[in-house]
Structure formats: structure tokens, C-alpha cells
Amino acid sequence: MSFLRTIFILFSISLVITITLPLTSSCSKDEIEEPFECTIDIDTIDFTFDIDYDNPEKYLAPGSQSDLSDEHLMVIVNDIGTPTSDMEGALKVCHWFNQTFTFENAGGAMAGVNTADELFAIRKFYGCHSLALLISSALREFGIPAVMIETAGVQWGYDQHNGTAGGMIGHVLSELYIDGKWILFDNNCTYVDNYDYTNPFVPVTFANQKGLFVVGKGVDIWDYQDGYSDFTHEKLMGFSDNIFCYEELFFTVNYSWKN
Image (tube, rainbow, N blue to C red):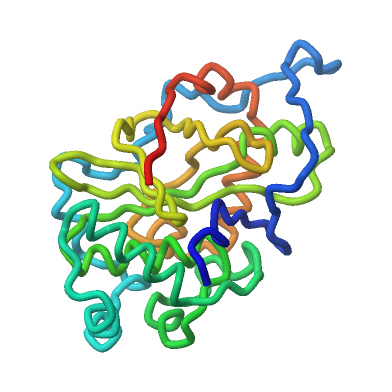
């Protein structure tokens, strides 16, 4: 399968949302009839989610979900050679997964269900969450530190808040440490090298989302889920519930995506 088929695969609890959704206008707290009160203080939130960015070597070690076997790694090496620990190597691995594995639409229901080895054995991924897991797991083994990040769609947050959302919309990407800096890497093999990992807003326009907002980070899904299977649902709903509390952080950064 061509990697173009996987551009911005979105997940929901029961379905995959594609880029063909109609445009829904965002609203502001001035348009809300009832008084809105924040239940959070964004000044107290650590948007690095305890990732130790000053010591990227920590993120060469896999988690319990992302520990790929030597047998599976050799499949990659036999096909494309040993990838280099730079952007060229990262892109080769990303394209290999996109072109070699098949996509089965299962949405967010499969997030955190399989290990990277299990997905590799069946040559399948179920959404952005499992593809990001596979790519991040393999890149660590080839010398590139990787962190997975869970995000919510900004427009979805507004729509859910006003009761017009049809399903949950978010995206899972990776942060990679390459050439002495952290970059943002998407599963469709595009990336941002002017990335600010302290800023939770990700300016990506797809499915009319106008951007993404980071709600969790970790070595793998099990790491940030910490045994709680409803982690993603709870974090996205919490984002929507407090959407107006986060508004001052929206559109505070602009990225140039490369491929």
C-alpha cells in the first residue's frame, strides 16, 4: 500500500474519520449562552508530560509494548538495508511500513491493544496509533530516540463542546531526536524540524481540524495509558470540556512540514 493512503489517519472510538468531513465553524466563549468556567489552570500543566528532552538517549529504550524482536528487525534490514540514524534513515523506515503493511479500519477501539511485535507478525495497522507505534519502535532500534504523542483535534473539541461532533477525532504522531534536535514526525512520512516540543498546539489542517492539541506523551501507548484503557477517551473529553481554557494556546506556533 502506498504511504499516501495513510495521510493523517484519524481515529475515533468506533470509526475512522476521513478528510472528507464538511467544514464546521468554531465558536468562542462569547457565543456560549451559559457562563463558562474553567475547571483547569493551564499555567499548572506541564505540556512536556515529564519527557526528559535533555537526555534523548533515554528514549532509545523500548517500552513493554514497543520492544521489537530481532527477527522482525531483520525483515526490515533484509528489505532496505540497515537504516542510518538520521532523517534519511527515518524516512526509509516510514515509507517501508506504509508500503509493506496493510491498513484495517478499526479506529480508536484498537489503540493500545497490540504490541509492535504482534502488529508486525500480521503485517497490519489499525490506525495512526498502531502505525506510529511500529515506526517509533523500529526507529529506536536503529538508533533514533522516539517519543509518541497523543493529540485531540481542535475543531472537534469545539464541536464536542457544543454537541455537534459525530465521533472523537485525534491523531498520534512521534517526536524523534535527529541531528541534535527534536523533530515532529508524522506517520505519512512528513516532518517538522522547527518543532517546539514545549508547545502543545500542532498547526496541522486536516479534516477541517485547524490544528491538533497534545494531550499525552510517552515511550509507547501503554506507557502513557499506564494501564488505563480509557486514557484517550478521557483526555480528549477533558480537552473538549475545557476547550475555552486552552484557546490562548491555539495558533501560537507555525510549522513548515517537509517530506
